[in-house]
Length: 234
Image (cartoon, rainbow, N blue to C red):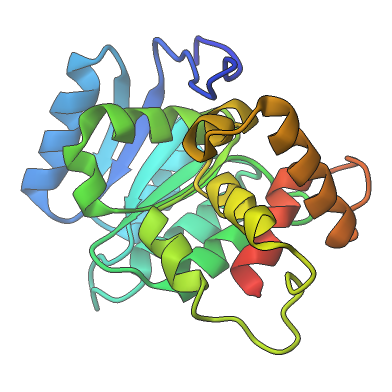
């Protein structure tokens, strides 16, 4: 993949990505192929089932894979399970999962693969987001660059899953807002613009979040990912 790290706005410059697409819906699959090709990316494989996805990832080692959650034979979670298996066999391989509906447990399963030797970019978006082409491509680039991107509707549903032992109970309302935007993949600068505050204020909130969640300085895993994991599992 050519390109670099996110700029100050969190936008990743990735002129060319090698992409695997896995979706049994031919029209959507071919539409994604055309969209990515027209934007200068290389689709190295376009497949329609989970087994073929795993084989394609092993064969091509793509910069990122776009995967439908529901694929044959049962059209339940075969795509998700194949994505998890692909990340097990090819650690850190970036995956952006697309789903028709919000299934928080699916996002949880996918985020769980960032632990240990996993890492790598992951994303979970609703298929409707593909229609917003620039936003979709930006999310894909973030995932390819190693970022974590969650659909805002997934983040919204997390807010109703709070339990008494919520690890985020010590966070202030503003800190929860910042963490929710982190979960959507926004950089500190982008968060500052959304909340209409200074970059310094966001940096202070982020430091407080790390402290309150008892996240150690970066070692083998980025603390932003660890914070998102804590958010998702709360």
